[in-house]
Length: 205
Image (tube, rainbow, N blue to C red; front, side, top):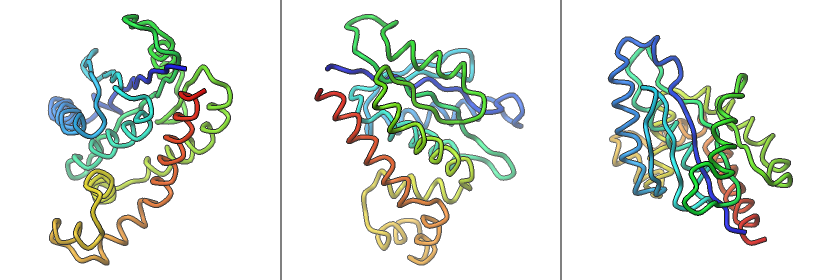
């Protein structure tokens, strides 16, 4: 099956921060930075809303977590930047922007009231597998501090050892290790690995 993935999101409490324009600028910066990591086309709308169409559906969950990590890492002192993101995965519809993935993602975000990360799919087996771990991952990410988000983001995008990461950030290896522990980095990594595998299995059906 050929599948597509779309992320639809909006900035959390964008009107309540001190500098709304900086918040939006940080979103633009995050998207520009991550395009090389998980290729996508994107559109910004309604001021603080955005939609990403992934080049590869298997990148969808990782990309959503990376976007959130980048926003949290860019938070100014005493404020928090973050986004709600709905991941839509469905059959690809060539040239049709109202295909399953777009509809699932857009409607999914509209219905997200109690979580900040949701996955919406036309395949019941994928939903069964991912609903609970995605809820857990959302709760973990909601607790990330700026430092934890920044450390996990660099860990996830650079693919270097904790020692190399510590040297790059000018911190001790113990500090990096503790930040990744607090961020539940190993669990998030396992969640992303399983998500990729399950989406690949759907694509290969």
